[in-house]
Length: 275
Image (tube, rainbow, N blue to C red; front, side):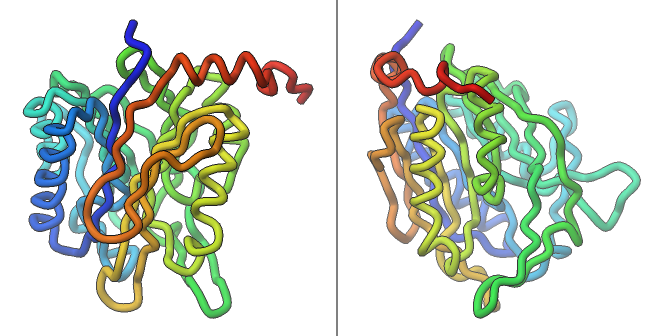
């Protein structure tokens, strides 16, 4: 089994133009793959980001590899063309019997084009921050249930989306299920991101002695909606090893799992838990 994995966390500025967003994903994924990335993770809302929660319903798809819609087709094409694991960090998935709401679903496609995992966002962003974000994701989103760890190159990747980052118990569960890398594709608001984004990502890495991959939306998406950016990769000691401060691009790093397991042996906090 290999002891390292080269990964890329993509950053872009999605809008309500599905075709343009997917074209950007194709372009950035191609460059990341040419640079050796074996795992490429796209941010939350990579395919569509409207001004209102309900706008995404026109882009919602059934997740069916046998009859894929345009978003899933794009992910399958990227995975097979570049022989990489591709994770679409959050797309609107049709909820049977509920035409007004969708799941916010992260979809993982293996290098052979097979659908290997789906994670539906558990914690929905319903907030009213004075002078900042006002949002009710639950108006047009159905929460998921259950932690998901997928395997890539023999390593465990724990799946989450954006607001999940504020709930450390999810990441403890992922760690207990074998996660060595925590995926946090996000569209973090500019206001909260300035103060909390990096702190929370580094905390999740340190608490769980895991790598953290955090693809991100950045910039203005139309109207008043703006995302913080700063896609990054954090190592198990809490150090930021790669980052995209702003603009389109990707953070790339080679994850050293020998080091991860050495750190877990030297600082056995995970084994010392009492609760």
